[in-house]
Image 1 (tube, rainbow, N blue to C red):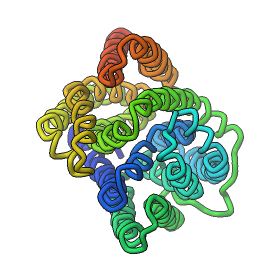
Image 2: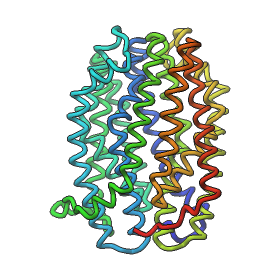
Image 3: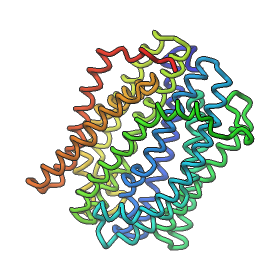
Length: 441
């Protein structure tokens, strides 16, 4: 329970397993790129490493719905409303099964079209299509894994997701080496390794939830859509889902601009994007922890505790994110060079890292405040702020400026500039608005 005990201890002990779990996930994402880049080549590395924006575009909406579900689950758990809690959990699982099928079909069908829209170079297009189609063929496992992890975290349990991520990471590394290095399957092997590891960890999560001794136990006969509960979940989740999808679309536009500089730029920037995930570790950890903490405490009507937790979470997230940013700025050539030894690939990756890394504190502040507002049921506010600055302003800036200044550094600067604008907006809202008002369902 996040409603009792020392606030700093509760948040840190909850965020730490999320941090470690995301670390393992990031490591096995990097293993994909490292194995492919070193044993297949730069073109294959470009195909795999540029995957993040397209994947997030397709599944980001579903993840947003799960955030709405986690807020509802945390709220009912804080209220000790066990009947509503059970309905919310079983509705979430049913929705996850349906969403997994939709993601699979949409990803397999639309991947070539999306890659064309991104301006993927012909030299890497066949490999990119193969990687994405195989990846999305495992969409059900990917979605159900995140469904289970969201339920655990909403209940205040971040340890089990850590355990399952550790297992998935280990499986992915072993399968990468077997499929790519041993069998010579190239990008197909990297995709197979990721999908199989996700299915295995999703299975572990489902088995645990079906056997757990607690109010979040899943019973197969009770898995169905409760329309009243689904409406509540969608009411909170759709704004975040729309935000994720539109930001994902904006990132696809950004990626298309990077692609216009060639496959070497794709490989270098793709390598940076994998490393950038490390900066997201403290950001994601405290953002998720704050959503659960705020949801449970407002559900329990512990308003002062919610305020104190919000202040601590923001401070911790910002400090840790900037520490990661400083480290990455200093070690940029070594980190990028680990993926591919081509000097041009390294130069692109280092340039992007040294422009963006010093401003990770702004990214963290925006995400932490967004996590607080989502926990309070104010999911529309983060949607508006992030859509405005991380989508509209970012796209206008890039498409306009690159036309007059055809320099890839113009694309890189889009991120710090829009992080700054969103942070200022969030700070004004956080300071002036009564973000806890109207929390009741």
